[in-house]
Amino acid sequence: MKTAFLILKSPLEQDPTHIMKRFASADDASVVLVEDGVFQALSPDAADRLGKAAHEILVSRQDIEARGFDPSKLKAGRAVGYDEIVDLIMERTERTVTV
Amino acid sequence: MAKTLTIMWRSGSMMAMDVNVAVNMAKAAKAKGYSVKMFGYGEGVTAVKNGQNPKRFPNVGKELEQMARDGVEIAVCETCWAARGFQRGEEIPGVKIGSLTNDLFRFVSGSDRLVTIAR
Image (cartoon, rainbow over all chains, first blue to last red):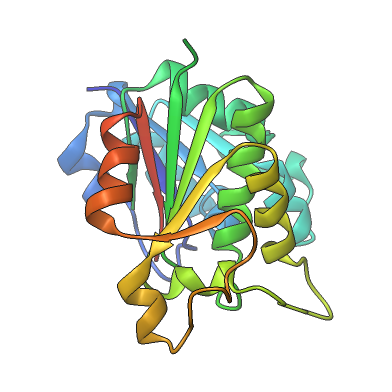
């Protein structure tokens, strides 16, 4: 089942990929990073893990910039607005799992 | 008929930015033409307390009040509300002090997607 994983925590708090792998294969997994979850795409090791566990990673641009980072520094995924996050949740996946 | 998104949040208004994420997501969904419902549970009920006055960060209570005015159905758990010593009438206008069984289940059963924002 195509699944959107919503991640709010930094890699210092949590490695979300263990749980993600139990719910969906990488082909069916998309990731949405908000709040401190954006650090998952800014930290090289965490970004590498996430890139192997999901085929798509959307990172809230607003939450990257709120933390003083430049979206061009992402190690995985791409910076998007909430409109694209909603599109992923409502149209391109079948369920949302908060990790 | 427009698809419906239900957003449930469990974090308090002063805990993190979780409620702001819920509001941002709800606004974006509403702008794209989706129907949106929101439910606050646990510490999340504090986000609908009327009269919030944060000095240095966004007033999420005001944002939820505006969302209710814009047609977003918002309810919170009555048991959680009472457990924190809040009375009926202390909630922001347009929000229902409701219940899991009557409101959250109704929201979910009529929704195409459920997003839980919690830590």
